[in-house]
Length: 321
Image (cartoon, rainbow, N blue to C red; front, side, top):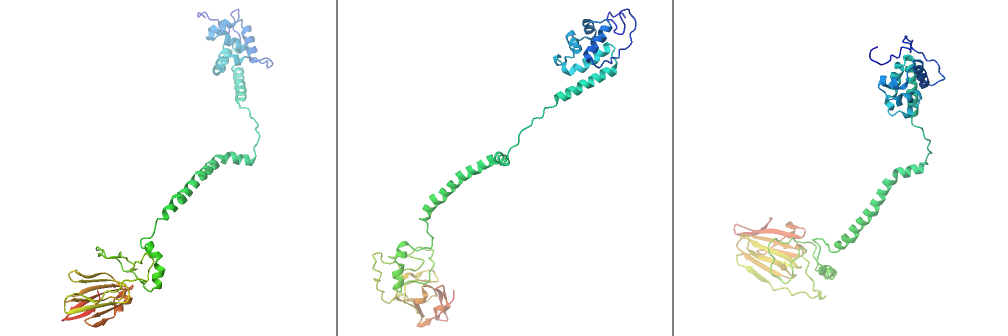
């Protein structure tokens, strides 16, 4: 050998030494490695220099002080390299490495810790406590809010709401005396879409006469005397037993009548043209054309009579619309 590094297989006299088979199981593997090194007459410094390993690591391996080695991941490689350098049988080295791995795996296994059990009620409490908290908070916040929204504002607004077809308060208060006096009407007539006439009483779709707010419901205006409207050879005579809304127009759309006529009214409309007649509260009305009475039942619907005064061959006669 010319490298200057002693051959571990040669003894001090330069003779060849056989591979050492360490069978003493009583001593540790590190002790057997030290015995093999001393048997070859080697020291730690020369072995460390030959294997490029720190002397401190070799000393720890021989002392079986594996916990002190800085690089545990390289431990098995150090042992294999050191054992082969000293001529230890590979089977012995493999057996030691396998034992080290088994020992490390056992030490690395986590220790089982016995924990005490918990009661079923506590388990349910811990599992559902958060969800129950959210439910309780929702009920506490949402229920009062909804209650205040319904009872706090809506009820106060409802007191000011009324149906569009309801009668005014003054008419509701005076409805009973009017019905006792026999002047209540059984049906309604829809208001026309044109502007109402200038009369003292407001126009009501219910045809209900506006009572005297002073409480004197028995006082009614005196019916006007029999009057005639228009001119012509043909006549339409209305006799009203009750208050009635009357609309009479000619073919040009001119109105001969458009007002609420009181009970007892007798009025004549003369014309040479056909007329369009609408009478509210028709149950208390009588009609004649050129002296011939007209049966309003043929033209009445919901207590409103609607017909035409047709003129044909110089004769006037009622006709449906």
